[in-house]
Image 1 (tube, rainbow, N blue to C red):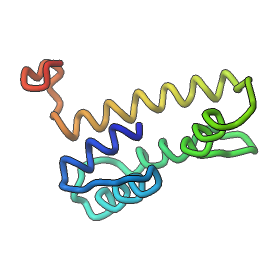
Image 2: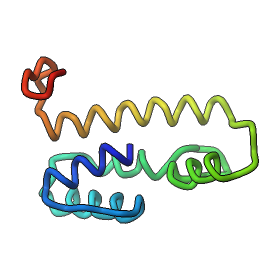
Image 3: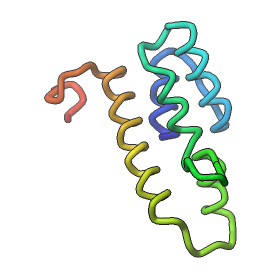
Image 4: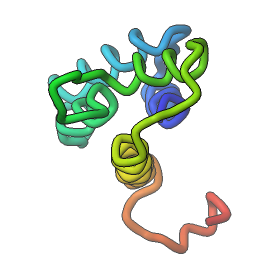
Length: 107
């Protein structure tokens, strides 16, 4: 999701060196209507679990990457995967349009 955000920002002439900055910049572009994307996609990248121990995707990724835990809740993991797919597909629509057979992108 982070790399999709970076691609979105690049398209609009911005660059971010930190994940939180990229999220905030994309949120700003959405709120100011410069990017035609629903704010719910920012919520997708920020939320990973609807349970009582709510964590955003960035925090969970950092915990899994740098932490010592070797287990993760499979339900949370599947939800994150589904959200990531939905998020990247939405960014692709913003960047390339709705045509799935876009020859310029090679997709």
